[in-house]
Length: 94
Image (cartoon, rainbow, N blue to C red; front, side, top):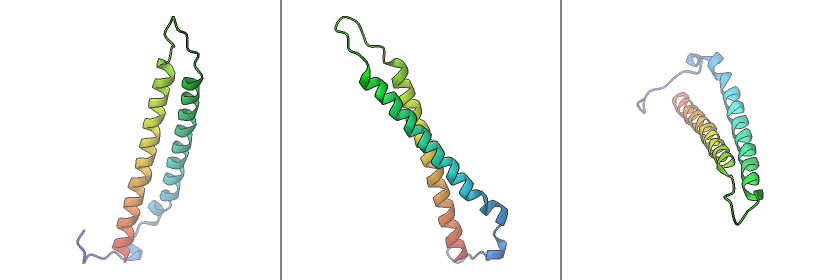
């Protein structure tokens, strides 16, 4: 959008504006769940017994930790994109 373009407040579609808090709430919940799963997986990795003669089975908790990390990254991306959208909207209304 050009720097001279202005959008009137009446032109903003209010029903979509009501979805923003819900989107941020879902994203925050996703971050919270992802961090909880990451904490659980890393605790399991740290608490795994070490046996000098056999390998310690860590594949499952490492995979869960990676999945949780990706979930946190995806939710953080939703927050970032929502913030970008709000910035653009406020700039257009200014």
